[in-house]
Length: 240
Image 1: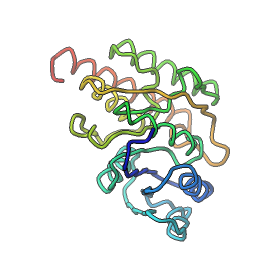
Image 2: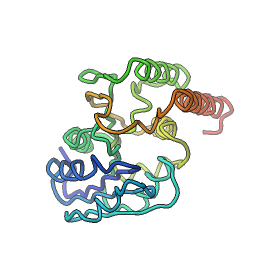
Image 3: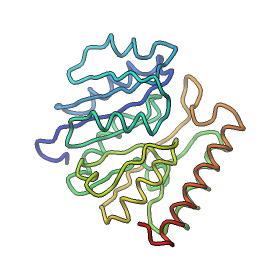
């Protein structure tokens, strides 16, 4: 169950998500009980995403306009602005269902962190085979190098108790690789983590921000691998 008397803040970063953002906001308010705060952090989308959000009328809906770009930095800005006892963050492209976010929130009476996971019972990854293969390879490497039982290290779909930040520092650097470090540090701090299976499919409209071209896809993957090795080195040298 959702922790008693808790306030929830959901952070949604956007860049050119005009087609999806209104539906996502509506779905969040339909699936998650009040009090609810939804913080949309827009990185100067040229398609007018921020203007769509500005035209919506929901209690607790907030819009932050940024001139800079960067996924981890956008999440971090939203976290700093959030008022909730429970924080969640997710993509804006409708591949991460609001109903599943509510399921994650309901785990937090027992766990510190709940992750939407493609690689536990009830989860699946139905994107392009190349993307699925790359994600599985990165997660296999992470489990080997970082030595713990988390199955989906690059999920990016999460709900946490605010007190997690008493133990873990959010490093606002990178794309999905920031998530690997955050979950690794939470595990090392002894926090209780629950993975909830969810069905992940390619977005139906627009272009994935993680793989707009084959070159950038491999560059992004390399960054994930380097982040994993840097964390392993930190562990070996005793810098944790």
